Image (tube, rainbow over all chains, first blue to last red; front, side):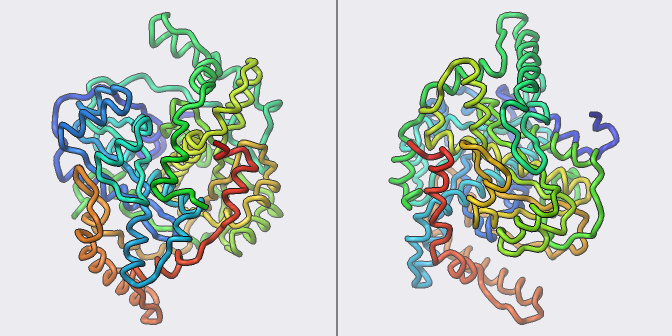
Length: 253
Length: 253
């Protein structure tokens, strides 16, 4: 499907790719401010804006975060590194100042969901606005390897947790676009389609991804999507997340 | 801060407002397809694409969803209603077809987070691309009032849950832009700022929001942000979410 006659925004969105190599060049403060203002224009549940963003400029903190993320060098080398946090602390504090104790409500799984989603929507606007200004971005879920350490490093209070980070910078290298699932494998009408109806489309996609890796690695990597995903997901990871989140005051009810 | 000299995308993002009144006019299929293709171009954790989108066209299902969402008429009247689902069923099924049992891994809080965030990032790209094409959108978190019923209505299997819905359509009425928190209240450098450092900025924002409601309601509503939020959040809501999610195969570890 050709996006040629569609607005620039559609092309911009459909051309997204994650950038992990950055030129050593600063981002103008005014650009960054526009990115943050675009981030916060995203919807939030009941206008609660239950998230915060930490801009990490301290090189020592950057180094530590890059190690926590699994030695991802670009966490150090990117122009800007932002940590998106789900934040119920702000709501708790303003209510306490009004003499209201909302602890029981903030303890709920529902409020955990709300704050996590609020952070994610703001982050995706960050990604889109950064790309609109010509920057490259990559999400850094790897921060969840060491949630306790990240929380301490950024001095996050109870009721705040780091959902993920994001690297932003001038791209040195723009990788090839990664093919996505065929529509028929994830986009349904009126009811969910079981694997019997989708496996054929996933099989085709498996071949597309295999070809993509073959091309990208000049033949050294050859894997279907099913193989990659099964390999990546078969062992349980980050089993500490549940206790970490509870200790931070989330998911208690 | 003026976005005048910035690309259209920045202005588009910063001009977002939720639309709840729609003209009775269909969206072209090609537009909708571009919106979905923009949605799926968003990043996903390890390229897992752990979400699905259900387009609800059946008027009976729309009516039910509108009731579940708390009698939100626009769920019925909008041109398109999409339900964004966190989806670990697809990964489970493809691994089973390869003879691998990933149940223990998919049970984790980490995989719950991943699938929820994947769904949210795709949804925000949906919102942005729909607005780029001139449509209005509003998120419908209200679906979580009746998660069991929504799950049954859309025939969602275990390992899939409805995160939220989204209404898309030609706007009949575009509301005034809602002011957001001042940067100093949610955007920090190197470490989180406690309430002692942010309360002044939140107080100022309280007055901004009070004025916004006064203007919008011609004087009949006068509330600070703190008052709105405290009122909305002080009672625990959707206490069934934790058991619902566990029954759907999430958050088990």
